[in-house]
Image 1 (tube, helix red, strand yellow):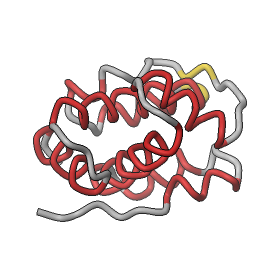
Image 2: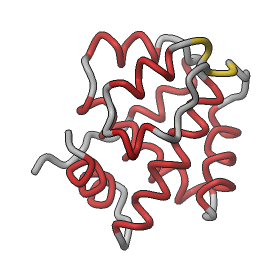
Image 3: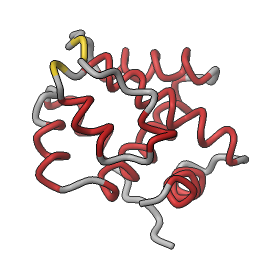
Image 4: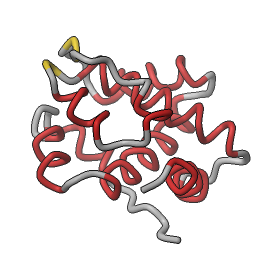
Length: 128
C-alpha cells in the first residue's frame, strides 16, 4: 500500500475527520507498537511500510511489557485523543498495516503480543 492509500484506509476505517489526523493516528499507533515489540521486529515492519509512515518505528524495539488497555492509553496520549478514539484509530491502523505487509511478517509480529491484543486485530481495512 502506498502512503496516501494507507492514510485513506485508516481515515475511512477509523472514521477520522482529516488526513492529517489519520497520519497522527498512524504515527501514534506505530510509535507505541514499536515500544511494545522486541528486537528487530519493528525494523522488519518498517521496511515494508511507506518510508514517511515507517519513521515512527524504532530500529530496535524496546520490548516493553504492557497490556492492551495501556497500549490504547499510550496511543491516546501520543495522538492527543481519548482512549475510546485511540482504540478505534489503532484498530484501523493495524488493519491497514496487515493489508500492507507480507502475511508471514504480520503474523510473526503479532505472535509477540499477548492474547488480549486480539481486540487490536478486530477491524478490516476498507479497500479502494
